[in-house]
Length: 521
Figure 1 (spheres, helix red, strand yellow):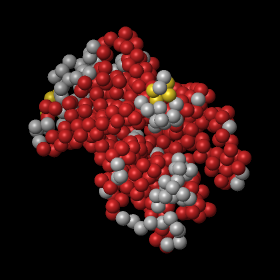
Figure 2 (figure 1 turned 90 degrees about the horizontal axis):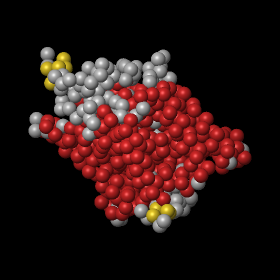
Figure 3 (figure 1 turned 30 degrees about the horizontal axis):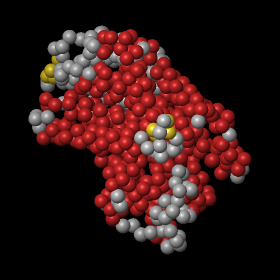
Figure 4 (figure 1 turned 180 degrees about the vertical axis):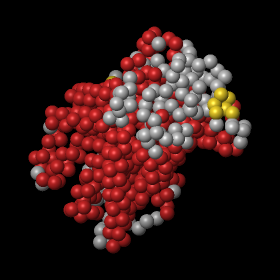
């Protein structure tokens, strides 16, 4: 296939891949350094499945009871529909800017800039949270291994916690800075450990549940997979919000598209593969946990509020025994640490792309000459994460908690815009075939619509001061103030960049151009 682009080009570093990438630019990244498996592993790792499960199983059961597996399936649906959008857009424009680049092409520079900002700020929040979780489980694991409560309690000392957290961030930044080769090696081991331990947990939980030796155990029922059995719509939407958060991060494998062998097809396939592994792991673990513990609010019941924020800490020894139970703590630590490292990938490459297209200062577009990675953007993301977490921790624990609660707003914001961008970008091709109509139009639009609805519902819920930590600003919930405030901060920064880079915002750098002419040979 030879691409013949009849449009005038901007600059002298134009890529030659993709059917619509005529005005996209090569960033200098290391090409062909990631395959299908490596790309899928990056997507799985960024999601942090074991950490998501230990922190979400309890709250989800608290909202929807034994219908937790059904809610996981419901949360999977909009993410799957959005994944189709990412796949189709990546085939046309395999650019590491992903959501930012695609949305600029579909809707213009301003909406595209805000979409990129949504991804960047969401990732910074997640990175800080993951570093905090890794630190907590690090001391918890040391306490388990040494039998010393004093060591476990070090996590409660603010100075020790922040310093250890900053050390984790520094290590993760250093590994990401060394490029995809170093990243892959670490991730294969950490993701493999997570999935192996989850498999052991599932098997042992089901076996012990069927033994009849545990009072809280219940028999499996197919009604657990029925979303219409949830007791109320408000409970369903609350559970759905938690479920959607559990899938966030799979798109990281798309942001390495310029470094992937077969950049137009492999990243999209990797995203779908990662999604299938995640939903399979979540469903099996949810069913096994419910069979062993039930949904009660006492003892080992998953609905117990005293253990809901860390279910695996309560179930490790009862399910896997004293020796193997330690592996579950190791898996949670590995999950948080692995995700901390891979989550630098999307933010660094989004910042790199925004800089390459003059939407951010040019300095962030610098590539490390040896590692062929976005070194300046990676280091900047690490510094921003460390400063953000340290300041928020010292400022107020409630502010830190509410910032994390505001994360769901950012996720729905940029995912839904990207999904709508797909339907609009390909609007002239929707009548070409049934396949194009469904995968380029109907499915992405439905996914965007579902996430936009969750975005609106979350905004309404955040207005209530009871949402999150319970704090408020002039009677308005702090989570609402933080979430909307971060989006408004992005708008202010966009106006600043508009004065510095008028060409980008006039649509002269990255255009809304229709697909280039492609000639089959």
